Figure 1 (cartoon, rainbow, N blue to C red):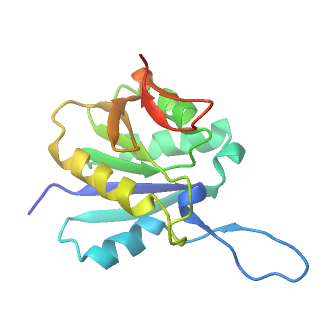
Figure 2 (cartoon, rainbow, N blue to C red):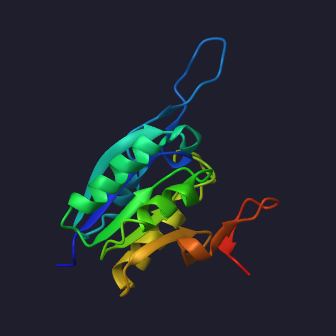
Length: 167
């Protein structure tokens, strides 16, 4: 059996759902999208999913990041996947890196909700799980757009919105 992976949900676009409303549009942060994705692929990985918060990343505050850091510190899991909104992902990664944990922590998200047909959520989650299982050095990484990048060497292009390595 493989080493257990802990998934921590913070919210963001990946977990958004759009309940029907009258005379308006709204979204909610729903149950962890990663659980639905893993159900579809019938994975045999040992995975535990916990929700730390359910917020759009623009609404994530310092206290939410501290709660996330505490969850990373307190778990005995050595491999952690964090689903997060893309707007503030790097800010959260920076806070987590200050913990200097001997764990592999990977943050991922999506540009479209997992419930949308053309979402990148399935790809990003699958890629992040693959990275988590094969990485040998601890640290905080971002897995987006088919790249795994140490958080401090990652940037989000202001024109394309894509994540990539700092050049």
